[in-house]
Each structure stands twice: as structure tokens, then as C-alpha cells.
Image (cartoon, rainbow, N blue to C red; front, side):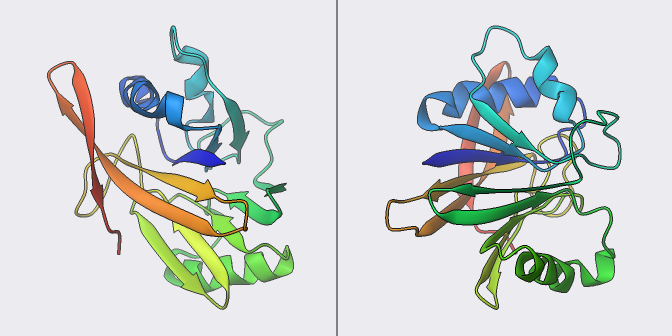
Length: 174
């Protein structure tokens, strides 16, 4: 199963539509780690696959939880925005969250900076920001693949806009 992982889209519908046009045929679903989860309501003429979402600090949709915990192909996953954690200790707090929820994968956003690390057997994934990027990269997203043998592969991409056309380049986050 392959999932588009995005966060912090911040009403940048053009980038959301651009990335969906590029990857929609390659994905089974979307993981949105908050701050812009309503953006899908404005996407036009594109079929949107199953979406898992966690509410961020600017999201006003109250029926979406701050923490979503679920399984994909025997992998337990915790999805959160990250704003309820200290930015100085967010990595350690995400590991603690993974342990608390018995999740082997924690997806979060909030920092707007792509991040990927495996720590204490917990895979930590932050796709960066598709709407308001910070750091070395432009708008970014990740593709998460969970295979039949429960292995996890995460690849990161920078969204490139040239005129009205979109493309993407793979990169390695911090």
C-alpha cells in the first residue's frame, strides 16, 4: 500500500492539486498531518482516495482528532500534527508517543521541515510543508509504502512548479 504524506498545506490548493495530479494513480490513500485538512474540499475535478487526518493548530474542523491511531497492513501508525509538543524536544516526544500508542510509525507535521529517522524502533516521518515550507527545500511531500512483509519505505520529494506545470525531485531530508 502506498500513501501520499502531506502536512501544513495552509490553503495552498494549487500545490495540493498539483501533487495529487502527479501521484493520484500511484497511491492508495493520503495521510494529512494537519494545518490545512479542509483543503481537500476545494480540490476540483480530482478523485481523492481515502484520507486519514489529524487536526493541526489552525484547523477548525472539530470532528477531526489531534491524534489518529490506526493500522495499515499490520503496521500501527500514530498521526498527529505536533503542535501540542515542545519544538525543542519534539523528536523524543514523538518516540514517546509511538511507545505509548504501541505504534511503529509516527507521522507528524508542524515544523514545516522534512524529517525522517528511525529511533528506538519507531519510524518518525515529517513530510515538511506543502504550503509554507521552511529550511532548505521548497514545498515537500513524502510517499510512504508499506509492503506485504510489513516493511516501511519512505521517499521525500520537493514539488516544483514551472508555469502551470508541476514536477517533483526526490531528496533526502535531515
